[in-house]
Length: 259
Image 1: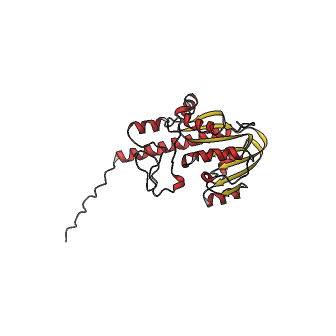
Image 2: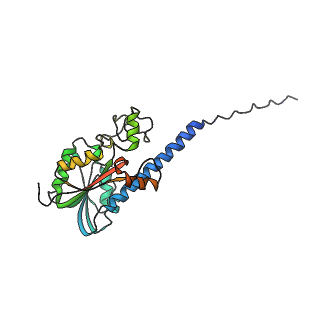
Image 3: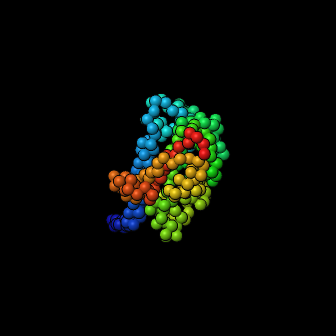
């Protein structure tokens, strides 16, 4: 009787604990970043004045869901939008938003002195000609109308530490082919569309000075979260030290009497 050959024991592939830990850490950081973005949205909601009616423009309206949530303090908002992507225009129109397709950097296709409120969340960092952007917002706002704007903060602690190490800031892209210059950046995009890249990243003073230059009156400056600290601690620290929050924003008014 032929002797049965014993199967050689299969060696289990060793688990690379460092890879596992790194992936879990990145997931946790991504979770914290999403929580920071949620907090930023809550702050934007809180900066919209209560009103019975207002004409609102959302620049970069995407699907339209966020601006509808953002104007919940207005009983009957009349919402307009502009977005560069056809799918965003289609989605937001289905929600009743009067959306036009266009590039906000090249001008806003709306009448002067038309809107009570302009909203621009995470848009300005994608633009080259920010002066044109600011002047167009001023033009379409009614006297006494106001702007709510938020963007990423170059002087946030995680950007500062990256710059100290000689890396690109987390908030900035320098190539459309792929993310380069910072090995710890959470996103790993390839072939980034031009309108997704972050071109100009602001500090608190730079953001305020830009809109002061275009005759806005800064009503309020705010920071959201304190990445990478977890909530609710990040919310508390963001209120104490908004200058180093990952998200910064302004509420700025168009004066009733032009300067």
